Length: 227
Image (cartoon, rainbow, N blue to C red; front, top):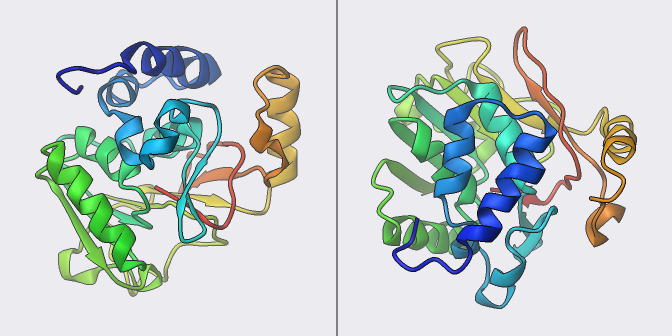
């Protein structure tokens, strides 16, 4: 939390209503969402909207992901303080900061160099020393730091990068939003939370998928969504 944080109340409300209220129960994930100042990862003119229940544009056709989607995919990874995790799609750096609260080592790959630099500066200003942001093609992973205990792909995709490119220690430790079940998940969430649908509701809903035995579902995600 920042020394003087005018958004602390909004962040707590976000966690209570959007995250815990939708079934996220891992206390470490909830604490991470409470700790990371989401407003620090969006353009200054959008800081007042940072805790709303939808993605926000950050430039280059990319967005900071909906808070619930960040929480759901993070929970699926079951990270420990000893985990090394790979994020594909740094975006704003917000997802990387959440991961850094839970894991010992985070490697984040971003294809846009200016987004990578902005995210790196924000993470450094918040003293997240366990995050390495690199510029590259996320579809190739980042084998230099493999193996990873978890992989998270923060953009809608049909599947993970081929296993030969990104080595994982566990077959279960992967989470990414897929496009296949988008409309079903959107309708389900609308039924459960009819009053939480935002102005962003015209965007295609998403689905968070975990490699292996566990599967989770999320909402509102576009192919341009990143961390």
